[in-house]
Image (spheres, rainbow, N blue to C red):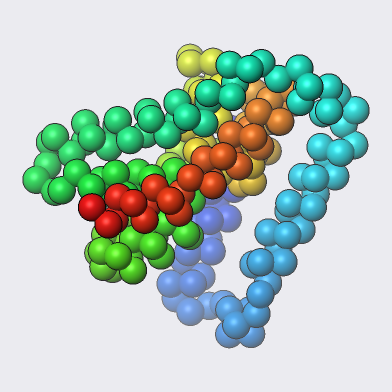
Length: 199
């Protein structure tokens, strides 16, 4: 829980600094965030590669786990349809927003392009909220719903930003499952978002 709060605190501080223009322009104009993400992924790769049980876990991956990304996608879209029932907005808008699966940077750009800035902003906030919920509620999800629950809630983020939290609370044996899940859900985002935006 402490790790989740630290991560979310950094997000909040960054938002406040950006909002009040306290970040130097040379940082905003550079690719620093891209290199930071590359560095993070490099460190994750090293931690996975140095673990001798990683390959063993991949080889012994339960075939039923292969359905986890599909279940995450279906469950999210079903939730969007249920939410749509209580409002007057077109169901395609809800499905497009839900199809971001936490991948806010890509999905919000797609939705803004197709449907306008208002829906793009809603998509951005919705997907950031999904990631924050995954970060903050991981220990509770594991306790009450099982070790796969934070992976499903994390959506497309389970191979990068939420991976350390999932590893901490679900266990090292779920690293490969988390990366596999994140990769496939991530891959579906541009296709599903584009499809639902075109309806």
